[in-house]
Amino acid sequence: MANVETADQIFRTRMVSASALLEGRADLSRYPFRLLAIHSPRGSIGTERMSFLLTAAEHLMSFGWDVVNITDTGQGGAPIAVMQRRLPE
Image 1: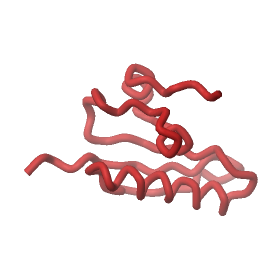
Image 2: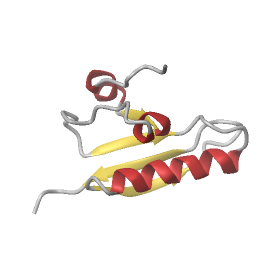
Image 3: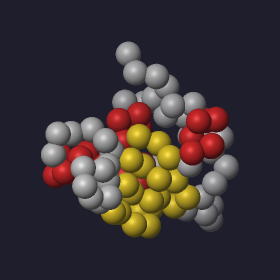
Image 4: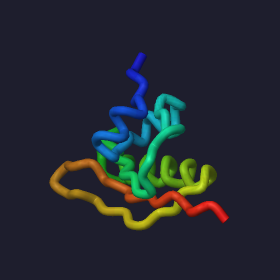
């Protein structure tokens, strides 16, 4: 079983994996920042990685986050989505 991405790990890196989000292994309960990056190393080709990343971004949107930007790092790197937590109304 893959490791839980703890609040402390996410706090230090300001990044979380798409797989941890979708598998319920990411603890964002005490995340103090408004911006967070999601990375998606999963998938054998770029289109699979991007699809997995977009699924994770949409999942996080249902918890009060919005997409700021999405980029493909190229050269076999993982695509990244920058997310921003909505301010409470």
